[in-house]
Amino acid sequence: MNRTPRMDSMRKRVKNTARKRPAKSSSKKARIQSPGAISPDVKSQLRKLTGALLSAQESGNREVARALHDVFSQELAALGMEISCLKEKLETGGPIAEGLSELGRRIERLSAEVHSASRTLHPAVLEELGLEAALWDECDSFQQRSGISTQFIPLNVPAPLPGEVALCLYRVAQESLRNVHMHSQSPHVKVRLEGSRRGVSLRIEDAGDGFDLDAALRKSGVGLISMEERVRLAKGELTIHSTPGEGTVVTACIPLGKKPAVTKPT
Ligand SMILES: Nc1ncnc2c1ncn2[C@@H]1O[C@H](COP(=O)(O)OP(=O)(O)OP(=O)(O)O)[C@@H](O)[C@H]1O
Ligand SMILES: [Mg+2]
Image (cartoon, rainbow, N blue to C red):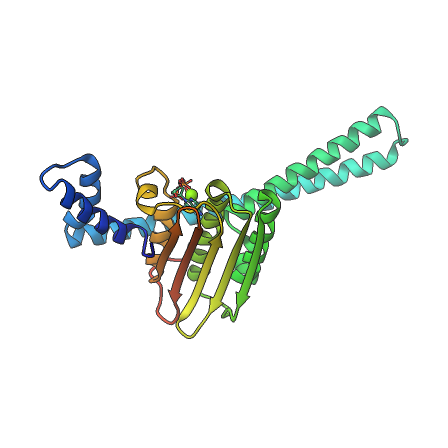
């Protein structure tokens, strides 16, 4: 299996359904056929709407991430310091000092959680240091929280990348890694980010259970579809190659040079 997730597999399923049951319609068939049945005007409006929704989602994420980082994270750090100061004024070993130590540890854990939630929503490092640095960070923290050995290989990555291209590839990496963790049972994953004359590509490869794309698209998840939509909006192409029992490779290729259609979140 090697194709873009939605369009090609939908086309294939339309063909299969038509061959087996030409006259019968089902809710599945109606859903599959609808993209072909709608007019180009409606299709283009739907695409604009999808772009606007993704952009609105990103700017909402960014606001919440900033609030988490600037307000909660800073405040928790200040609380932690006050607790340390109080502890220093007390005799060591007493119940109050022990209570304060425990409180300090809880605040540290809470601070790490808030930091991680903020980074998941919108990583500041993506804007400050670029995609390569953000993916080093992401792979590192993915390995820690999932226990899956994660290798990141950057090769000739152009810098700086347009913000919308970096964000798109970052989201593809996040969703693919989430899928590896949730569904693959793979003990390791390889993330490769590579620049070439044609553009930039991101490849996430696991050695897990693999899956059947047609069956996966019949499920209620939106991860694969939204990855494809993001990449399409950036004028790129998403390919999924998966064989049950042999693992999965997700590749997103985005050409550079043309201005991508995704609007930068404000
Ligand atoms: N790397 C993978 N290995 C094995 N199965 C996968 C992998 N990636 C996706 N799948 C299969 O494809 C299905 C659809 O994935 P998708 O990301 O669209 O949805 P989801 O992960 O189930 O839910 P969501 O992403 O909306 O939280 C998954 O439920 C899973 O069965
Ligand atoms: Mg998913």
